[in-house]
Length: 150
Image 1 (cartoon, rainbow, N blue to C red):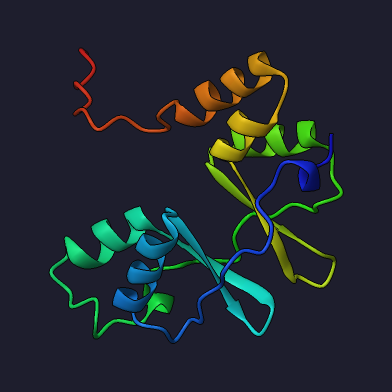
Image 2 (cartoon, rainbow, N blue to C red):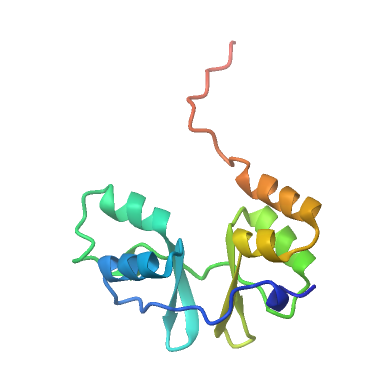
């Protein structure tokens, strides 16, 4: 299977200059946890609900006064819609990302592959389970590290 066979197409983009509140409202309306950020039709970044909640709101900033460019990830990891789904799984596992924008050779956003898309549209349940397991492994612990005995 190809990425295009599984991904969500016709994805809404926000502009870097939009307020965090506007983007969060659109994410709520669309029931999505991520919003690609585009200049024209070219992908320049991505922002997640977690970015908004942790980096903006929990920091005490006013989401109506902040632009989404302040909290987005610039130059997100992407894949081609014509790439093999196995390649996308390996990339998502290696980079521990839950969503992977699909772009054309010019950087135009043409879709997003999410864990949900994979769970619903992929016939290989074992591969999907492995994908979910591997992207869910913490890369760092939130627990304090005990000092080594000398």
